[in-house]
Amino acid sequence: MPKTQLNVRVDEATAEAARQRALQRGMSVNRYIEELVKQDAGEVGHTFVEAAADFM
Image (cartoon, rainbow, N blue to C red; front, side, top):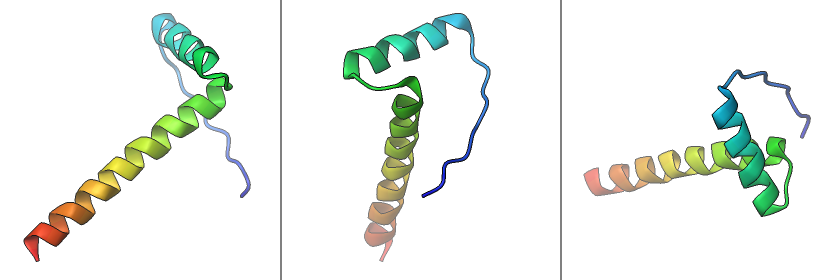
């Protein structure tokens, strides 16, 4: 799948935390952020499916 570039601005403490977390996991900051977003989107989707199932 083609990649799209996003530019975000964060304070230096947040940037350093992202760098350190990525380093600890042996991945790039880009990959780390991508994984965080995928996890967050997955949790939201999973929660929605569970709530819909409960409603039905």
